[in-house]
Length: 210
Image 1 (cartoon, helix red, strand yellow):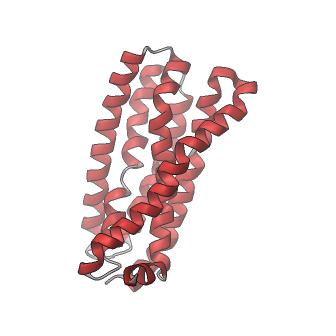
Image 2: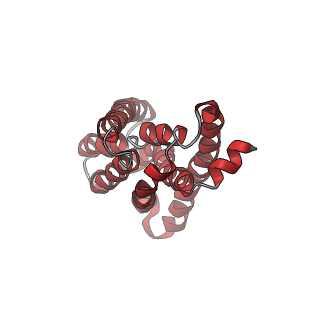
């Protein structure tokens, strides 16, 4: 109860949690629907899709999480706002690559380009979790992280695949099998919302840092 009252009273916690939640909405939603997208739009088999999507996911996500943590630690020693600005910048930078990859008519180019937004959209994980743990005393960090992950996953895992699927269903009459392409494209707005929330939170981090 003490940790809940402490964290919920800090705007920086909500900025980090909601920023991560919107980022995760697109992150989880993209990974959930990406196999179906490649099969419907590029005619790949299930085995081909598994190999390609698995490959770009492990390369993109692993490198992105590492890069985000490294950058935040490097710049965060001088300015704690970096733990929110690095995620904001990475999400913003991922947007044009996401659009280019989804709209590409070449499956090879799409696979190649989508590695970049998958990496950049994973860069928020390390800095955000680190920042959340520094909003409370060391003895409260496990509970603080659990509360953050609860909010983050409730939004990200709970709504990501559902919302993109619903958008695809709504566009199916007009675009047919290509409706999923445009639903994933529409999901770009979640990256932008996440970036905005992280950017707004940056100025409060130093004040709330423990």
